[in-house]
Structures are given as C-alpha cells and as structure tokens.
Image (cartoon, rainbow, N blue to C red; front, side, top):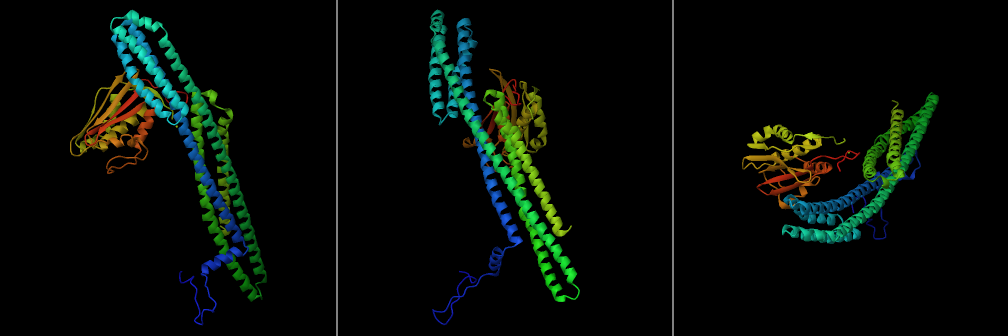
Length: 527
C-alpha cells in the first residue's frame, strides 16, 4: 500500500478505529460524478460518443478486413478457372500438333507436341495448388491428371508409330475414337470446374454484398448518433451560456448598494466562466478527436466501396450473368450516398463545434496498349542511372530486343525498377555488370531478362522479395520493400509473369514473360 491509502492505527490499542484518507483528486472526481450538473451531462455524452466510436472503428475495421479477404478468395477462384482453361488449351494444342505431324511429317509439329507434353505437369501442379483444401477441386485435379495422362499416352503412341514409318497404323488408331473420347471427357471435366467456380463466385459475391451493406448500416447509424450527441451538447452549452448572461444582468441590476450580493454573484460568475472554459476544452479536444476519426474511417469506407466496385466491374465484364442489379446498386449508389451522408453529417458537427467555441469565447488509369521499342526504353532507363553506375564502376549493357505491344507507362516502371534494383545491390568488391536482353518465345510470348553480378539472393528469399514490406539480405540500402511487389503486380496486370534466378554472392537474373500483344477487357485490365 502507498502512504496515501494505508491505514493509520491509533496507539491506544487494537480496538481503536482505523482512519483512512482519500486523495483530493479522487474526492473531487467522486463529488463531480455524484453531483448533477451540466458538466457531468456533457462528460457522459462525450463518453458515450467515444464508446460508440470505438465500436464503429472496430466493426469497420473487421468489415474492411472481411471484404479484402472475400476479394482475395474471388481472385483465387478466377485463377482456378484460368488454370483449368490453360490446361485444356495446352492439351488441344498438343492434339493439333499430333494431327499436323501425322498429316505432314514435319518435325516442327513434333517439337510443338513435345513442348505441350512437357508443360502439362506444370499446369496440373498450378491447378492442384489453387484447389488445395477443396474436395471438389481436389477431385477435379485427380480427374484432369488421369485424363490428360491417358490422352498424352494415346498421342505419344501414334507419334511413335508415325516416326517409325507406320503412318497407316497411327491413323487407324486415331480413327478408333479413343483420343476424341478422352478429349470430350477432359472438356466435360473443365465444364464441371466452370460450374463449380460459378457457384463459388455466387456465394462469395453475396457474402461480400452483405458485408458491405452491414458496414454501411453500422456507420450510418453511428453517424446519426454522434451527430445527435453533438446537437445535444450544443443545446446544453448554449442554454448554460444564456443562463450565464441572465446572471450577469442580475448582478448589474443589484450591484448598487448590495456589495455582499455583488461579491457572491461575482464569485458565481467566475466559477461559471471557468466551467465554460472547461466545456470549450472538452468540445475542442475530446469531441473533435472522435470526429476526426470518423472522417478518417469514412474515407476508408469510401475506398473499400471503390475496391468492391472495381471487383464487381471485373465480374460484370467477365461474367455479366453472375451480377445482380441490387448488388451493383448497393455498391455504386447506396455506398457513395451513405458515405456522402456521413461526410455531410461530420461537416455539420464540425460547424456545431466551431459555433460552441465562438459562443464560449464570444469571439485502379486505364491500360493503353502501344508498340514499344524495348531496347530504346531500357537504354533510357540505363541512362537515368548513369551517374550511379559510373560512381560504382559499373556498366549497363542493353542488347537488341524484340518489340512489345503493351502499356508503355507500366513497362517503363517495371524495367526501371529492375535496373534501379540491380544498381542498388551491386557488389562493391568487383566491377558491376548489368545486362538487359530479350527474345521471342513460342505461342505469342516474349521474354526479357535483367541480369547482374551483384550480391545475389538466398534461395529461401526468392519468393519473399516479391512480398509487400519484405526485404532480403543486409538492410543497408534505403527502401520500404515495395519495389518488387509493385513490379510483380504490374507484370501480372499486363498478363505476364516474373521469376528470379539467383545465387547468393554471384548475382541475379529476373525473367519477365509477356504476351506479345496486350489484350484488354472493358475495365482496362489484361486478360
């Protein structure tokens, strides 16, 4: 116990009564809480507003997190459909190459078939990875694995016969219809995957809509309650100020010949002025603070609405039959209307606060495809860091590269970020060398590489470096861990992919793979 709260015992013996002392501040607080007054009413209202704000903040945060999670689940579901379609397209391409070889005997068709056959396991692995934990997806993955293996076995057998000169036997086997049956079963399984994806998207879209509506309702009710509390406080303080003005008039009326009464009223007036100042402090600090928080969370709610709108636009573009007009109305009309109402309410409350103080004192850019000279663009990025490379005794070599039809600004940012990153993490123990190159790839793809002989990246960090706010190796260079995450996101938006090959202490190679021609949907994102 502290000296202020310990019991003092009399020396007269154990039967002496105990004496306790209460700190002056605690006594004043108890008297304040027990005595009905305007100040107590205002404090109670402010406490209620703060508690309400905490509830709103917590619920809004949870709803935003939930919405973000649902959006991520929707994106994963779309990736499942894309993986299934990539798989069936690959098998169809292999079948086309098989038929071409049987008809013409040209080795190019055999090479195309072999490339498709080797790509099939990777496509199956991608599909399995995106359906882990879902019984329907796992069953579809097993079925696709079995059917594609049977189909490639059938095609490989016919190609082997043809390679040995047994063209007639190979054609006869094709005519048995086994290959067509397997392809029909593969296409039927992909159709089942599409049906499953559609049902999953419908469920998640409904959950997202319910979460958005709940957030709107909670914030709208909270805004109304906070505005009501502010109005009540304003009325209470105004009434008090009116009473104070009446008291001043009474003091002036009885001032002559009533010295004692004047002193009494003067004391009351002084106390009243002090209380008014306390009220002004409460209003200007305690009430304005939750108001600012409401404004901030309103902005977050507005951004969440935009995110939902963007997702709904994507769903509307890719699968218009899945979109409900009520959901679109809620996202595009109801949410902005509710946010505007809350914002207008908070602005009104801010004006109320200013009035109280015056009385108390009396005074996601759309992508634009265009043909890009990649060598010229990379050289421009290299020239931009020439002063850094010269200072580090390094060189940037830009080799001839194929052109690309894509969004210029996005590609400039991707290449510039990779070159900047390579320069930043050069090894001072040896002259730096950064090489930018590129080449066409089969199937309408083009690949660009940015290689360096810098510090390199540990194997365990190859994926980590693409995550937000994550960095690898020694943290002796400025940065927030956003560059490569931004690059990967931009590459994916252009329909491409990025990979890294690196050995710690030797250097790194970043490989960018893009479709030769960028295809846009109505929303401006790449297919």
